[in-house]
Length: 469
Image 1 (cartoon, rainbow, N blue to C red):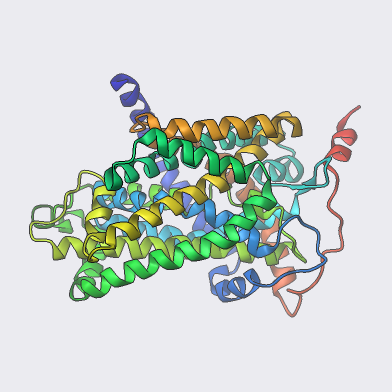
Image 2 (image 1 turned 60 degrees about the horizontal axis):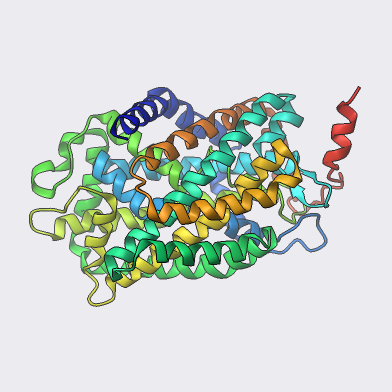
């Protein structure tokens, strides 16, 4: 297992090398320019996210689609992942994570646009879309769409199921001494109860759970930042200086590691992607099922996910950890992201660890739900609708196994699969950038944001028949 772990780590290090960082950040910048700096429309996106486009085609509301996508992105990456990035890449990793979130708003918007533009209906009349259909219908690259679907279905077992359930079981064991297998049974029961009901069931739970858990967690972070108020400005200064000058991380006094410049950038960008999934192509899969008057409206709604996830929640987590390092004499234990977060929340008397535990459990549970939908859509694209129910049962089983197995190496596997998903997705975005720019201009110029797209969503079966000789 040690040798296997070493091989996986080497593969992950190669995949997440400078070339992918340049591709990812470069695409974020390019899409920002091509969409006319769509980040300035974030207020409109937030307003549209709570607006129902009644009568429009789709399976769930825009808010339901957003909360389901947020359910998958707001997970352990926002707590353990941020801590891991800081522990391995220094405080400067938070700046790179934050920049990934801000620039990623444009990429998330572009992903949502092409997901709705190229979506189809399956034989049950349910919407299905994502990068695989953009690649197939928009670029005639079905083989690349198949690769994306394979990576998505596989990644769901890691980032979506095993990693999340393991984090919950570990936290419950360390906090309450609860045996991991008991956590596994409970998780398996509730996950199965929700996902066996399909997207509408997942969306209903997400609409109720996501806002509540996010607000409670942010309030907990705000309390800690009030306690550490005198260290906020020094923490911000340290984040900025160490992002470009890692030696400024204060390795001795505060416990932060000293890394090379690329180390801070790599862990910040990688964990930023793990957290907000901009560029990965996962969240647009559920956006394709949204009830929306036109593709730009839903794209704007989806883009707000990167803002809430990274710019708000990850920034709060990072500031909490770094200010806590200043507040603790001798710095913090940097051995793991989970320990960093736990130490920081211990500053809230009596209930700090409970707030962290509740946040971690609900974040992880919601991620398991959201990713189950992504994985099954990947399977459906490859094997058809008949594969959905078997996939759900396997997914629930993996959620249980994640609680009782050692998953040290799974984080590296999850990172690698995330990176592999980004490659075909980036191809779709870059090659369809002209389409994205044209549709953005069409609906955001003048007063066309409320226009209804009259073109009906085609049946997937009809498209398949047309391809047959």
